[in-house]
Image (cartoon, rainbow, N blue to C red):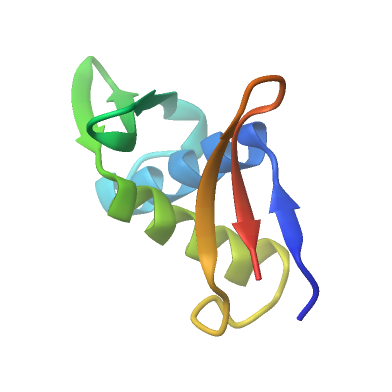
Length: 96
């Protein structure tokens, strides 16, 4: 499979979809803030109806896998996924 770059907005959309399915809400009800810390790595916070939930790097990868399956119609487990921080583009996922 060729390398695919998933931009920050699509990662946010993937987390919204992933959290919505886990919490039984609409994706539009979920807000997401991505973060990167030199010590902790990648993470996010999701906001659902006044509740805040931390999303680990593993959770981010799981959300991207769901997105790959649903929107790219590819096997999400046949792909290596690496999160990267770009100074101009923000947080992206590189799928190999």
